[in-house]
Amino acid sequence: MRFVLNYAATHFTSNRKQYFSVIVMMVLSMLLIGTMQFFRCAMEYRVESCEQIMGVDSDNVLLVYTDGRQFTDLPECTVEGVVAFGTYYEDGFRFANKTISSICISSELKDLIKLSIVEGELPKELDKNVRYLLLGNDVMIADIGEKVSWENSFGESCEGLVCGRLEAGSNWLLNLDSYKGQIRETRQSVDQKILCFSSVDRMPNHSFVFVTDKKDVAIKRRACVFLEEKGNRVMSSAYMSNAFSVADVENKGIVRLLSRTVWMVIIVTVLLMACIQTVMALNYRRLIGIWYANGVDRWQVIGVYTLSLIFTMVIAFAIAGIFLLTILKTMGMSNSNIVTGILHTKVIPLVVFATLMMNIIGFILPLYALLTDRPAEMIRVFRK
Image (cartoon, rainbow, N blue to C red):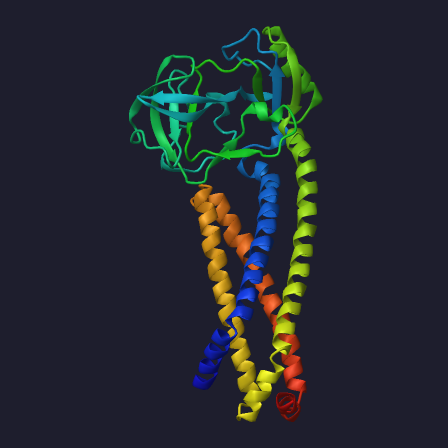
């Protein structure tokens, strides 16, 4: 074994230029396969994300958009077939000299999204005269149970009770405006945001959410008539499941295309690298003849070549890993739970599998030549 290690190290350093070219090609292959797989998984994640965070069936969530000319206060709901009614919007809460992005939700919709609270709790019954704050994992403005004051985008001074902190990686739906047209994303991280549940704040007068007993045309019609009677001309309305399906049509098509592209890239890259490694190995037949002439047996030759490939693969993985970490830190995604989750569960295993395949195929072919050629023939090649 010591002989194999020494020969492998000598062989690797003596032919460092050839192995350097293989390392460069291998790193480029890893990055290409990893990039394609990451884009595919990121798009697939978007397609599957909507139902994962909904606290109610999206078939029962009706979105209604109005012209926004008349109403600013949330009207009292008296629509038959509706169990909850409200709206939500994004705002910027100014605490002293710091502005924090916030999502304001009418109290009636507190069960619209599944919330994982790691500290404190949101009361089951919300007082309509109190603002309740749930802080994102990265928001540090006060302790649980404290009252805080801020200024909203209307210039109004507000006060609320910090009642809990959300689990890292928690999400909320995008602003309702995002669902007016075709959407490509369905949720957003709230790690650096505040959720404010309140019935005392003025809500936007252009978008409303109805949680209904069922997906029904009659309920949809009654909801639109209700808003029009309150002075809001309805511009459009749709159940959230329909809005999601509009996005899914395009997103799923992109996912299918990326899936095929990923496998085409893997197959082409593996075959290309295997051919390069095979040609490189076969060019060493004269060197192998020298080894045979000096008493090296067949399995020692195979061991030397195997260790050289392992050296190459380890160096390639190290370079690709350093490059990946540099890119993630540059783009500010090194602490993203979503990105790291995709990388650890979807991207890295596939890259490792593809790299092993290109090395196995690139090793088996020359190995076959080494095993089928008799040592006498290899020595004859050396003597020419």
